[in-house]
Image (cartoon, rainbow, N blue to C red; front, side):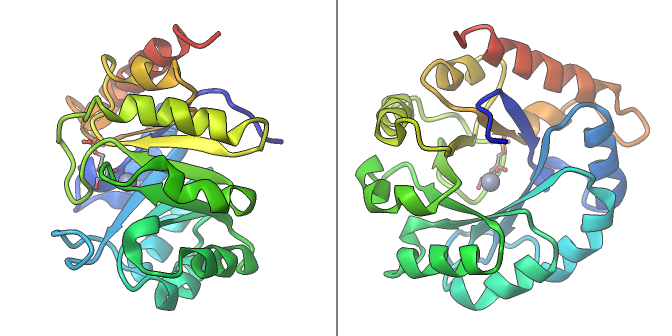
Length: 229
Ligand code: DX5
Ligand code: ZN
């Protein structure tokens, strides 16, 4: 069943890299709705992170949704590997190549939920012809590549336009980058429902002291829900 309730998706880019399995279990136990995995290739973005083997290794430690954000180019050749690794949602960037339509068809054919992501410099109209083939649109509110960057406020108007374009289609609006208790309500107020947060979820906690993860998640959720009608 599709629902637009607020979902918090911690990005494990901000987790302890020596402890991913335990970190995934900890954030879910502390109230995370989805687990967001940021895949970077050192080419599409200036950083390197997780291959399909790493995703397969953490999959048994995640009970809920594994949300895989592919910041890679080319992307098509790796879709099968991330599907096999157990991704539930696979998101590709509209800027990753000339054939995003084909990429989204391929993700659907693999039986996965289909996401398309937009960099801050890309107008929302870039997804206009894709709305009948996606389950999620991810609006980047930082330039992708690194956690801990500042939210780009000019993206809020873009999110509002996207919400209008989506109408009553069952499409999630995911926001990725710089989400905190201060910025979460800016995006939930204009229709975002999946909030990715790295630094703001993991700050102050650890696998040995996971309670701060829970209070951070609850604070972001409460701030976001407070402005949703
Ligand atoms: C950026 C990633 C984000 C990022 C979020 O390229 O896609 O998911 O890790 O981290 P924070 O919440 O710290 O901005
Ligand atoms: Zn991401």
